[in-house]
Image 1 (spheres, one colour):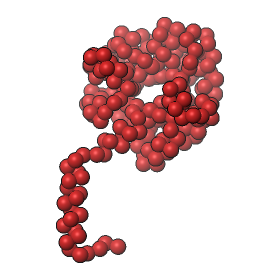
Image 2 (image 1 turned 120 degrees about the vertical axis):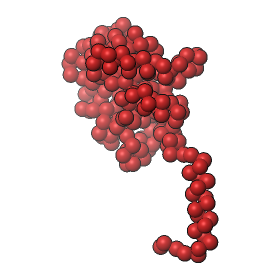
Image 3 (image 1 turned 90 degrees about the vertical axis):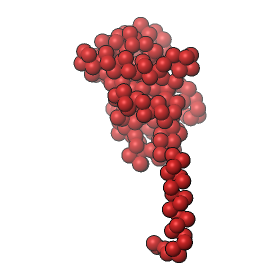
Image 4 (image 1 turned 180 degrees about the vertical axis):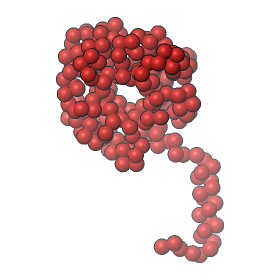
Length: 217
């Protein structure tokens, strides 16, 4: 499974990247706003740091404008994935940008039917939003499972990029389902290393070691 960081925080991306934990990054207008930087400058800095795809999102809602914005974003770096919303105009933009040779991430997917359309439009990634479905008492993981099955049924090469990840259990379940990628906030990725029994075991080992009166260095 590939790990993408869902952030525009340069320091957090650098830490995860140095540990070999990152295969890419996803951004959106809200994350760029939170970073406090210029979209082009922030995106370029991320692209220079990370080898894998960096999703940069259009803000237009009409197809021709999305295409124009997508081409401008794609010019920032070779590893840009243009992010478009799963609307009818977004699908038009996806088809055109994909035909131009650009990698496209179709975002804000909330149904398997939408995901099927995105695959047929040539999407490189489809981003089902797990947490936002859970928020309205629907099963976001079930959507990931349905998309995985449909894509496998017909051999679609579009990668399932599970988004709106809220917890470590979301990551684990997505891995079990067979999602190609998860994109999660850096805090969730760090939380994957935490377990109370690990902490308890380490405390016991250190207490016993102290009793020996020895040092390694």
